[in-house]
Length: 360
Image (cartoon, rainbow, N blue to C red; front, top):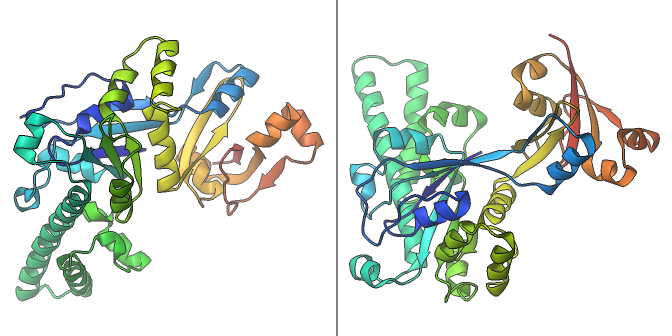
């Protein structure tokens, strides 16, 4: 899973990035001239993988991963000259989801330049910028289509695309994101190449000061009306991630009534919000976690492991992590009648342990 961190300038995106990844990317009260994104891949810590690894004692234990990409801060009106530039635009389009960082802390220098924190206004500004960026793309494509039509290239495909893009542009012009436009499967396929920003799932991190943390109900409610939101004490949690002593870390976390690391809380929140689940493959060679969307089938899971498994899919041997823990071994699961053979249409459940039978 790839998550792009976006937000207005000085919202504390890089602070959140550091808290999530344990990196030491530069943060400053002043606007940075750096345009290259910060990137890091982190393991999705899952105690189920730890217990499976202890049981099977494999040569390799592989966690699911999340890549975080921290993009340069936006300014109001950014859509008019390009929300992101060049390589960064392509990277943000490739993100599976966008995480919008919203400032909820005061700083003398930042307040003087960017004003006092206003979470409700900030989330609206970001949402508007994404819609405007998509509107510019749609209008430019519409111009090219109509130019081709005027030159006599009146193919059925081009005429159908004109109607679709015109409807999309009208929707965006009303200030509504692509994600709220009613589209058929064929429409979605036709638009997939554009990778519209406002079509992506997104959620917010409210980046609060220590003083405001857990006391910002109104701000959370205002953001939640637009998208799901989770609150972090960004600067505190960045410093927390740099502590080497687990005991010291736990003491500071208890003081703030924080029970898990920022990384664990955000990945858990993202999985739940974006509809991802984990299934596992196990054995003496490898214990591994895999990520798919909730509702996907056994053949989808097979394709996640390797395209050959999906192409030659015969059956999936399936049992659950919970049953394995309850029965203590695969033999115990079989003896209890909890071991199953499932076909292509079987809907994978979170915590399923799967072995794919296939032939190519």
